[in-house]
Each structure stands twice: as structure tokens, then as C-alpha cells.
Image (tube, rainbow, N blue to C red):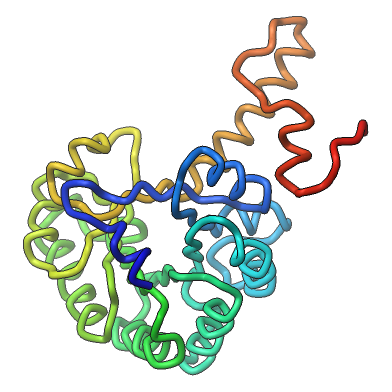
Length: 262
């Protein structure tokens, strides 16, 4: 875990792109990213399964098996651990570590904080080498009014419990207010992870705020899907195709196989 943990630096945050298959992960590594995450939405959508419904446990483990020995540090988005049983979550984390993953992202989906803390503690026990990024969904799924003090207090309460349970980092997707971000950075002795938002602070701004990690979540998958739709529409309308695309041989090489027409 040390090499991965060392990439989380206040003032120079880890920019973590998230892949959904072998090719996307290896292509990102080829661009110089030392660490790559997975996106639960991308994995679920690619398999025709719902995201956030504990439906992609097997697919997530298969992807980790494919990527765990790659030339990059792998952090796996495991939704809520795919179970309400902390022991089952711990066993899943142990299997991730066994295939080479160095990090796991666990979201609380606004369930009981005590249950999520128990899952984190179980992961710490079963796979002590994994970097546990503890996510709270208070800003992602929360029903509090606006950005009021009740939401701030609930976020702090949950993250304090997760840190006490052994989390190595804390994650608040949906939080974009610079003042709130800075307050969380000052409060915790572990890295704060923020999800990149086109309407939120830029990467340099987040670095100035002391954020230790900036995740791209499902953005790359959604952008890739959007580019595919734009390309098909452009061709259908007789327009020039926009944007860049890797050559066939380049994509073929990502699988390690010979470049053959097809």
C-alpha cells in the first residue's frame, strides 16, 4: 500500500482516472498514469447491469483479476462492498488484494454509519495492505437542504467514524464548495478525495486547498460513450468526424495480441 499511499500528497494530489475494462486501463497507464481506478458505473453499464445495486460483484472481481498484474497501481471501486455483512466485505477485499489491487473504494450509500465502519474495520483486518478510501454520500445522495450546517455535521460525523475504523482516506463526491473542502482537509489527518466536477474547482485549485486525491469517476466512460455517439451521428450526416481516435494497431496492442485486420 505504501507506494499508492505516497501518491496522495496535499498540494500535489493524485489524479486518479477510472477505467472500465482492460483496454481503457492499459491505455491510461500508457499515458503515464501510475495509478488507475475502476468506475462502478462503467463496469455495470458495460455488462448491462445496474450500478449501485450490488449486482457487479463478480464482474468487479474479474476485472481486478485482469488488471491487478498490470503496470500500474490498481484501486477498485467496490460500491458498498456488495454486501451488508462486514465479514463478506472483508473476504471480497482479501480477494482483491490477492489478485494485485492496492486500494478499495467503499461507499456508505447513506446507510447506517456504524455498519459502514464495521465494513471498513473488516477490510482492515482481512486485507491490511489495501488502501481503504471511505466514501460518504451526504453530498451525492443527501436530502439535506442546500449546503447547510446539518449536511456538514452529518458528513463530519460519518467520516470521523470511518477514520476511527481504519480508513486511509476519506471521499466526499458531490462536494464542490472550496470553503467546505478546506475545512475537511484541516480536520482530517488522512487524504481527502474529491470527485472532479466540471462546475467545481479546477485541479490546481483543489491542490491549493490541500486535497490529496482527485478522482474522475465515471467521467471518462461517459465521455467515451458520448464520443461514440457523436462519431456515428457525424458519419450519418456526412460531416467530418471530430476528435482523435487511436489506430487499430494501437488498440490491438493493448491486449498484447498481434495486429490483425478485423
